[in-house]
Image (cartoon, rainbow, N blue to C red; front, side, top):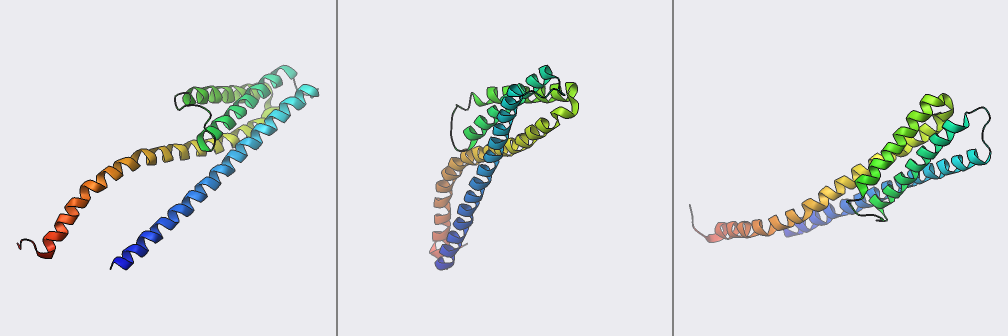
Length: 177
């Protein structure tokens, strides 16, 4: 009987380890997506500053590229903070997220209203990075909830064990009902 319990406990711990590595791998992939978008946006901004496209109005394009590039760079920093490299405290994160989303939405709206199709590739890049960032923040929130719930479970288990142990003793030869 105890042999099957040991086997069951070992089997239950193996998928958790595999799940953790899958989670880490997928988070790494999502951070790479956000990083690539941030790099592409920075290159696009520098490229437009160095050699502006004469077919596109320069003023709105500078504003759009600056806002979207700033948002994507903040998104990269916040993604790294949420996954592998803690750069700021939990109290600072909401402020930076607010700035990031405000810059991104303002850049998208400015680009679409003033430039139309010319802003399309940049908007698409930001949407892709925004989706990856959303998955990263959802996973971070899930891990934070699991971490907060873990100590409570550990506190509950020692309280339940003496009752289970007492019931086992009672079944073995205690009072008969």
